[in-house]
Image (cartoon, rainbow, N blue to C red; front, side, top):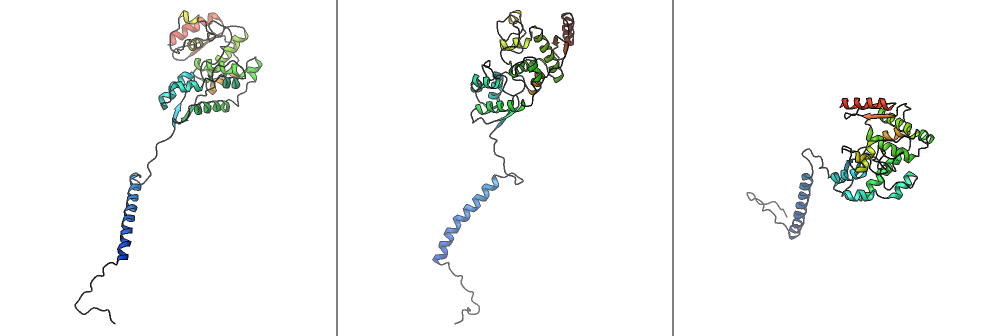
Length: 284
């Protein structure tokens, strides 16, 4: 039988069957979900279609050469929010320092906390940072030749102690090596080191104008009063200072003085030293 409609009459649209309606009911919510997902993806992309970067989990912390561990603790706290007391506690273990030094002298990890830029995750224990610094110290100092120091009866820990003093005394490698040579000469002759920065460490301030009372302070770190090297490092030196302490320039000088501008003047005798002091003051 023909299904063609009579002429002049339009075919009526067929109504959806119950089964067709059920399909539409299922598809509409699915389509809505797809559209929502596409919208979310679009919102998480930049104007050029690049995905928005997630927040970093670590913070780069720069620990420069010449800081005491208490100063490093302050930097870590300022940069990451990790309490300074936690860093200080993590750098206290004397047994770890004694193992690294090969002697029972160390009372903390002062000197072994290698200065560099470290990625720090504030959510992780601060001991992770400390261990990273210790590993870096071991790695960076592995290639240093200690033969000259050993020949002059200095241990590796003695070299580290001297390096910490040199780090605070000089700002360039030339002066570091000459100053190291001066220290070797004075130790050989039984003279005191006479370094003001060791007194600064003993009183807990790098910038205080030293008084006569400070210079007479009964501290083993006061090399203006006691002979030999102090019992431990006064800061955490960089590789340049450690290299200088292990391999100094052989020099005839026994004295040096630095001007406020950083220029260092050297002398062989006390008379020359007095002249050097005058030059340093004039140099500003």
